[in-house]
Image 1 (cartoon, helix red, strand yellow):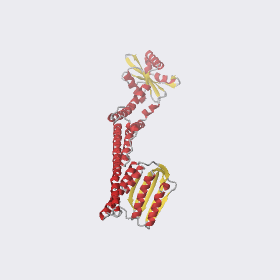
Image 2 (tube, rainbow, N blue to C red; image 1 turned 90 degrees about the horizontal axis):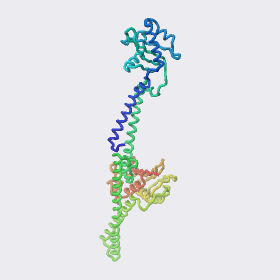
Image 3 (cartoon, rainbow, N blue to C red; image 1 turned 120 degrees about the horizontal axis):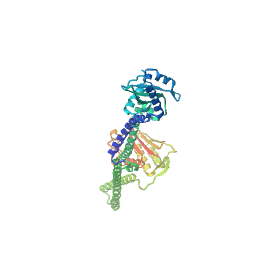
Image 4 (tube, rainbow, N blue to C red; image 1 turned 180 degrees about the horizontal axis):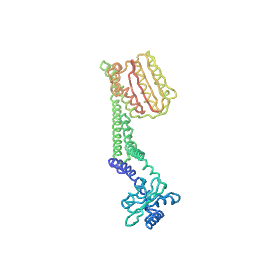
Length: 449
């Protein structure tokens, strides 16, 4: 198979149409070769015998001799009909000439020699030429006869069915070609969609990349691009983690210097402010390190554990915090739910969502988890003020803080939900937030088991 896609398309459609045309066109030729044959010797002898008797007794032309022959002679129990024509091709012994016999006379005239032809239910043969009184005559014979025919001759007699089958076959061949071209493109599209959704490890399958045409080259280039993107993103995340880690060294020295200054009685409003900002910086660095760790999925291995067991400490802390604020939290988790996950990352994700829900809820928070097929669905609802619909798609971005009632009093840096989204993505899951009616926020998480 040529390696160029253009040649594949050209040859595919050209061969498809040529094959259909050839099959349809060859059927009449096959039928003709099957039905037409040289005249058998015994039939040629019959015609020669009758011609000789007419030559010996010319008065037989004006009598009922040919009809009597038909009435009294037969071939293996089959009645024989004879047709005598003059040099102008006119049948002179009868006025009843079938369409098949007339067609055969034209065939024999084209062949220029005696032949036989098998029609649907009769065998016609001839002509035998002889001369009488200076006039040329031709003698033909017809026998009622049938013989087995190949099954595909059925299509010649049913032209509408043949046309329908030709269209169907053409469609099947074109569909096969379309599948051959469409399957790798579909695989390429799925990989592109997965990459767009954040699954940087997804690649086009080997069957597609091993093709030697333009599609295979495109798939190979796509995988190379995905490798580069994954490497750059991971390097960026690793760099952010490394920078955050390195910032801790001077920050620790600063905090140590502040502690020594306070010990020497040098505490002032300015040193208190420096200590406060250093503490904030320490928390920010801790959040950045956590985000980097979750995105890179480092220092943690997946385990298959019950969801309720994995989140038990987080749920206990959430119940205590909600009780301290006079709010009610309802937890509904099926004890039978088990899935393969990173316990720390998933716990941190759920903890962030529960803390946000408790902080902004008026009185009620609901957590519900269920398993459907190969997916675990986790839903966290609150009856708080909700979020501006225009900002719902952005709340999971790092450092994004919406200007809404849910965030105005927050002292965070917009990394909590980013950590949550990174943890869910590390589990190949999806997270989505939407406002509730009449008010409140609902966060839906879908995780593969």
